[in-house]
Length: 235
Image (cartoon, rainbow, N blue to C red):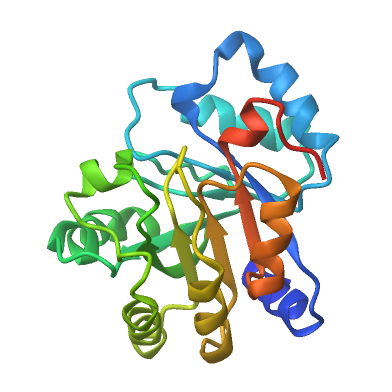
């Protein structure tokens, strides 16, 4: 079974999932065994790996070590065309449809296509929506796009609907790494009522209470990054 079909099955059965986001730039190579042990012994269902801006060249090393020592599905969450590893299980083929920068709508995707077209990776076309969180984030700066305002639920819904009509299989609602506030529940609810595919929510979720709010609002998969890194998250 592909990961995408697995996500669909869990959604159909109302089984909620959560995943850990590993940013290679924040990982000390010496601490990789400890990180992997921590991930493997968590209740997380999957692992995303990637970041908005990478200075370190250790993504491939992290992927190899995670695949060797961790049984959880490993998905590339690419911030650029350099963040590709054939050793992972899948890759979210992101299109930043909340912005109007053509590089992140289609430009980067064209660059990556020849590397991915015959790849053994499972490629999952994903609509990527940035949602205002109260402070500027790395992804906002790097992509040179503005997030959808928190109070513009109708605009967020229309954007997600456009993503589905374009044939994108999943919706990723992103508040950003280290976000001041997570994605508002009313945005998640409105999109969950209309969108058929799995909905991923990430950014700014610091504790179990916030994760449960996202799940209850309709998120199928919640991604935890900074809170897991800082040992502030336990489920």
